[in-house]
Amino acid sequence: MKKDTKIVHAGYDKDRNGSMVNTPVYHGSTVLFDSKAEIEDALQRGMVAGEKVLFYGRRGSPTHWTLQDAVTELEGGYSTVIVPSGLNAVTTAILSFVRNGDHLLMLDSVYEPSRRFCDGLLKDFGAETTYYDPHIGSDIKNLIQHNTKAIFCESPGSHTFEVQDLPAIAEAAHKQNVKVLVDNTWASPLYCQPLGLGCDISIQAATKYVVGHSDALVGTITTTEECFQAVHRTNGNLGLSVSPDDVYLATRGFRTMAVRLRQHQSNALQVAQWLDNRPEVKRVLYPPLPSDPGHDLWKRDFSGASGLLGVVFKRTSEDAVFAFLEGLKYFPIGYSWGGFESLSCPSVPSGARTATQWTEPEPGVRLHIGLEDVDDLREDLEIGLDRFSSALK
Ligand SMILES: *Cc1c(COP(=O)(O)O)cnc(C)c1O
Image (cartoon, rainbow, N blue to C red; front, side, top):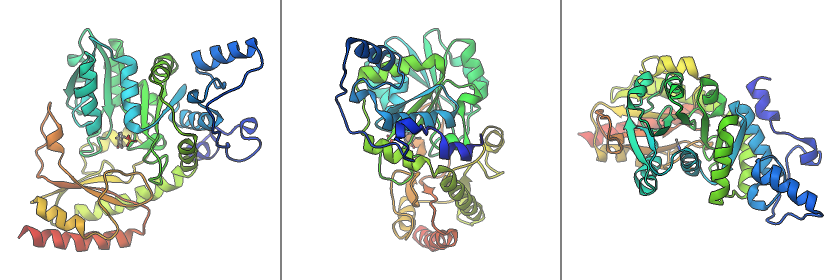
């Protein structure tokens, strides 16, 4: 089955849906039982093994199972755990493998709240984090310690767009029995399948392209068979639960992800190429551009690109960047992406790095290219760049 077909049909179950196209939204905490045998079956298969059996509302319902199955199929995994946010997917996945006395290898360009978790709660719990150069590839082997349990990747990072060599990292990790966890939000499971590249866990801030409409927060953790129990147990122990309404919105968004992403990609590529030729711009950070340092890896490991890109200016200032952003008609400032709409924000990656340096002129900007007409977007940005240049003088 091709991926566009999976997007439409994955997770559909006629019985579960009562013959409706979409799975109903099951609101409920309490599940009722008729017999000891039924309780024991639900306990063993549902709660312990993580099979799709009703036990208690917190453990999910058919509404959740449909999203779980759909994401699992697209990611090419064994199963998927649904959690209340993308950040929660990151933290739950890490806590499933890294404990007191353990060591985590974390890429230096990671999403900043994930870094704050490692330097905060994870450290308080007695686990140590070492940050590594995202371009490290197979040399990651030199950083693996006797107590290293996991290597965290995010490819490309959501401000600097550095692409990682996931197969090389996975190969080095598995030689030493270390798990590889990947934040796969930028590409979505449509355009990259980290498990197929040898990694163990693929994480989505489904808040972004899966939900796709900026109206719900959801995270997904897709695992291999070997890793499923660890993540299922952590999720259960932490007592996490996602509202069926939000899960429904995620499943609804999922069904149109293929057409939306094609438009995001097409618009973003046109904007990126246009920006790349502007006199104010030093670099556009977008792996599909042949000039991007991550282009070859992107071409090898990804089947497409999303709508998020970065812009580095030749000369810049905070005043100039805000003169640019504040007047934009179609790019309001917002620290998110993945919805149908364009967004912008200033970008200062150097402050969130410790193992390597980001030496490009700052601030830059990050743009999410939405589904608007690309001519309108370009015109808006063109007028904005004139404001930028005037403010620099
Ligand atoms: C937004 C984002 C997250 C966090 O997702 P939330 O649902 O907002 O918690 C994690 N990783 C990346 C790369 C993100 O962009």
